[in-house]
Image 1 (cartoon, rainbow, N blue to C red):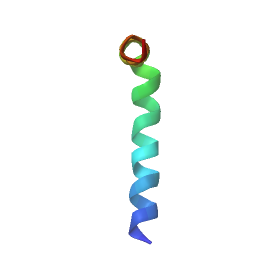
Image 2: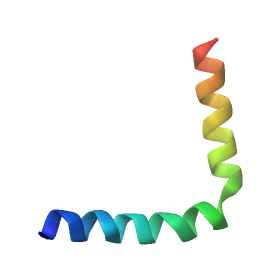
Image 3: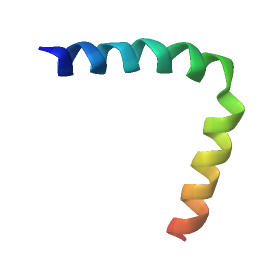
Length: 37
């Protein structure tokens, strides 16, 4: 199904982005932690 294909594409694109921009995810995680408090 095309839905599964699109999900796979999103996963493939998000993996290199995550490895290239760890500071973005760290900042987002710190924001989430601050909002949780």
